[in-house]
Length: 403
Image (tube, rainbow, N blue to C red; front, side):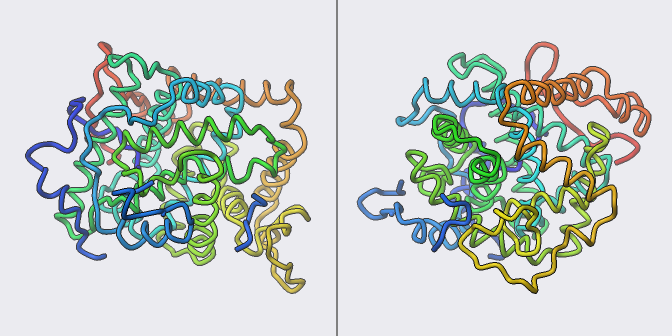
């Protein structure tokens, strides 16, 4: 689910009929203690993926050979309107920590080689400028999913979903032609984790003991995953929070923890572009500090901060190097300040309101007056839109001088 704003159509039928054969084949050219205290099926009679080990094995093996589900843009039979709407409503209540969790997720997916190859192939995330425009579009699309009415088929919710799915189709085929591989079910599900994984699996760390939040939010993202082309058998959000928790946990432990524990130079380069781009939204962002936040959330050894970070089913190694002390004083300040806010102060409604207001204000300025981006990239290039004035999806072409 590599949210992208490039699109030209809001058709409700996916994939494009002219591309049906390629999508159906979906072939790429190249093919337990809970860390956080915490066989759906292609054909139910053949697969029982309640066991998270079975789910992960199926995702990594079979999911790497299949592309978009090819399903029409329709709500699934298991859709629960009230639960979905409650999931949407939690965005305003927990805006600050949800944004922080999604930013960590965007960084984490860069550690997955197949996803990194596609992002590198599209050339929309490798510089501060292209990353700024790409990830601001991602933010705006995500906000559309939380803020607009799913019950109204003419709303911007559906326009955004259609645009993103069409963009995935274009990017997948373009990258396949260049030998970088298609966007697979595995890639979609692992990117889905980026949007949902850290805020749910890390909720206990910030005393976010809200079971309805976990149930409603994972149901919402199960629906979004379905609409964005993920088959139920690969969807990282299961039929309820209990099933979702098992899937999220095993993906974090067996995919993201090892991947983030052994990152490449390309990962750092792309993360640097991402953070340097989004720095023009929020000047408190820092490459090393945000990487630290991400690796801590994924329980990578050496990225613990509080003593309870070791309470994850793994015995503490007294000789383990703590990477916190490798950072400069400014990065250490950002880490200490940020973790103190979310761990000890976020539980208070007044502090939560203040933090949420800050994020809301940043979003408003990014939309109406992105002054830092204007100073850096120029007036025209700084403004990002995903909708036209009439509400249609906005075409996006990389035609500015900085591209």
